[in-house]
Length: 301
Image 1 (tube, rainbow, N blue to C red):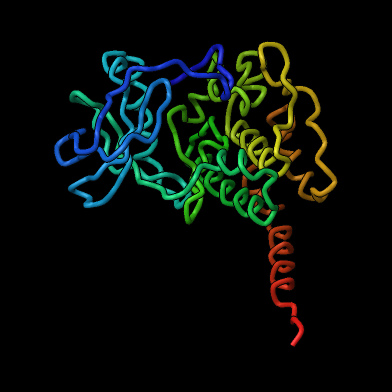
Image 2: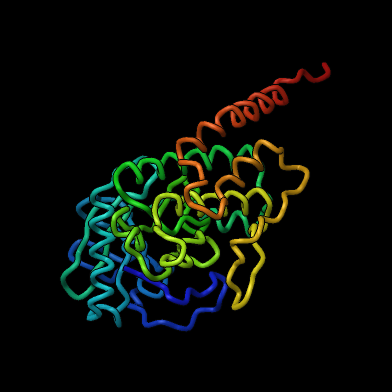
């Protein structure tokens, strides 16, 4: 399981990493053909692939070649495979296969047509409330389900939200069971989206579902405001114990209140995912009605 005692900022430049350098037509496994490279991280790289058995385009998430003999890396992909196998929710990425032996260990995941939320924020933020708030409610659905199944994601962030026809939460590479999360002693996750207890599990733990609520809060705040809520302190670590920066006046107080409740420093003071969704429901409904009224206004004849 990926654990970062000194997490790097998401924006930090990444050095060149060993790659499989697969080209179109190369076989990843029997009946599984690479189409093009999609991206990667320190441990994995991903390829768009054609799978003969499914007769469909999918995504292969491969352990990088220099990590195949690393027991920790192989334990990480095995744990992710187990987490994906045990979860089935409309708004979580689906897994179709896990190949943990052989020359190219990988997971076979569904291919999602759509950009990551991170790309939309970079290009268009602040995003309109009528887009962000229903998305937040959808993410609450996925997080509520994960918590009910005894799991925590621990890396909720815009890069892990794919804006497909139905938005999906992806990348369970650092997901833990609630029991495992409570025993964490080192930081886990992505620096800018980690809750205070993720930064310092020993001093501020235990880590649990409330950490995912924090990640949700930072994600939604960033989408609505076009910036993250906390200033950077020493070594570019967000000052998560300071009050969040205030919203602009175009963010309605009821919306700001829901988001800021997710960013309470103490885990026990944050709402559960179902409470957030319930709070958002009348706001989303009101926004929807306003849009219908605007579109339905009669014009001049």
